[in-house]
Image 1 (spheres, one colour):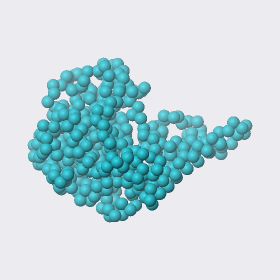
Image 2: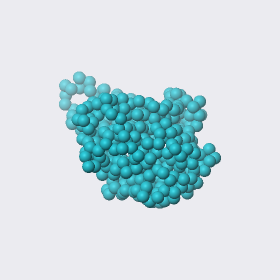
Image 3: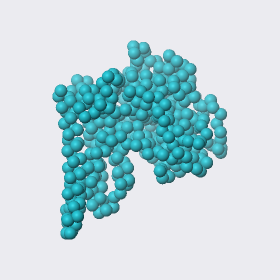
Image 4: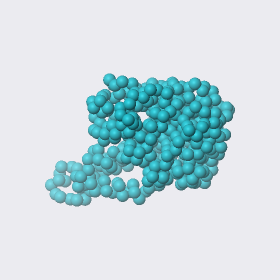
Amino acid sequence: MRYMATYDLMETLRNTNAWLGATARTMASYPAFSLMTNPGLQWMAAWGEVTERTFERMVVKPDWGIRTLTCEDGKDHLVSIDTVVEKPFGDLLHFNVQEREEQPRKILLVAPMSGHYATLLRSTVKSLMVNCEVYVTDWHNARDIPVSAGKFDVEDYTLYLVDFMRHLGPDTHVIAVCQPAPLTLAATAYLAGEDPDAQPRSLTLIGGPIDPNANATEVTDFGHRVTMGQLEETMIQRVGFKYPGVGRMVYPGLLQLASFVSMNLDRHSKAFQEQILKVSKGQASDHDAHNRFYDEYLAVMDMPAEFYLSTVERIFKDGEIARNAFTVEGKPVDIGKITKVAVKTVEGANDDISAPGQCIAALDLCTGLPDSMKASHVEPGAGHYGIFAGKSWRNNIRPLVLDFIDQNSGATRKATDGNPAKAGAKTAAKAANSNVA
């Protein structure tokens, strides 16, 4: 019961802070107080507004917010988000651009299960949708999954990816962002051994810890520093009575958020102080840069305890993927059996989460793959977020990834000009900067 009590205590603290913020904002905004000018009341209302929004966003799943897309024909097309595969711990979504011809590039974008929702890849999805059929793994919040659904660890995660790849077929190009990179590599190797005809055509791994020991970071140091017993005792809690997953053992999203914030505490503190000042001066808006970023950043999800613990133990501590010693349901997964899937790695020179060297280790593990089907790229000046979102992704990395996909695609490309990758990049940049209804 103490695990459940701790979970409910954290939720109580979050609720209390949200209530304090709402109370301060409401009290300081009484019309009677406007009879006298009081900067203290203005600051109090601003503090309440920012505080309330901050703590309320922590339990809200963000919306994709992709309703229309400006395509290469210059017209705005409606976008429907269809669930094509539905599973207890995650769905496969298709971003269907209506009244547009099916695009020859079919991309499976594997989103991380690392504390944030798949919507963290919103800008990545928008940039690819311009001239690709985009499918995304949408992982569920463990607090909303009943205990009757069973466990979910790294092997189950791998098998989910295997099922998604089988559903999409062999003409798929897979892009894995950050955390899922090693397990996506394992899923591809699993298919190579069990169902070769279902393998995707290409695999792009972006900033993932294939070999966490290749270049140590604060994340990898933490993984080696603590014991599994310490992690289970301090990080794992049982979902409280408020949610459908009551009784499920999880690694709470609020704990993960505390870890994220502590890594750059000064920067986040300064950002919130500046936002309170802007609100008090009437210079902030509902969708300004601060709110757009933190509405997504603060929205966190619980992870199944067995997934979190097995990731730390098997990927980081034991290095099963790095040693090519990973197993699924007792069957060895030999990465060397990948012989037909082109593999590309992308790293950021300034990545402090998955440092350069960790991801490119995948190419050495693909011993059965010719060098002509391997590629790598290190983006100068890019941090972890920059290699899959922002200018570095749109202007530099995305064109390289699409060019790699085209080089390893069996489908006949419909050229828009001499270079379809560059043409797509220009249109994608235009679409990403346009207003989405």
